Amino acid sequence: MLKEFREFAMKGNVVDLAVAVIIGAAFGRIVDSLVGDVIMPIIGAITGGLDFSNYYLPLSSKVQSGLAYADAKKTGAVLGWGQFLTFVVNFLIVAFVLFLVIQSMNRMKRHLAAPDDAKAPKPPPADVVLLTEIRDLLKERR
Image (cartoon, rainbow, N blue to C red; front, top):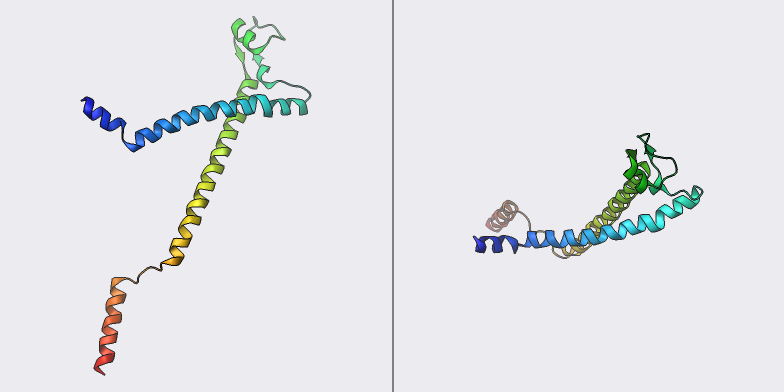
């Protein structure tokens, strides 16, 4: 059983997936920092110094107005639409970056495959080769 598990764990796909998860987690932290420390402050400056992470709608009468979002959550039920907006911007950035990476990889694949196709033309199909031989034989008989 241990041998089977070792074989499973050492398969290329499992190791690739593990590497992808680790890189994805590190990339997630980078994107969180980009959104929280760069993009949202710029948006906040454009909108007059607003901090979206502290915007919420109180759903309970226990929540006092003007509290920070974290404190308001401790007091009662709140709808944290500012935090949600931050996560949506986070997702859009990750999706766009992944789109750019996949698009560039596809371009590289096409670019690398194009010279090989141009150098070696495809051989004709077997039936065409056979018909060419028959034609040549018939020409020799005449």
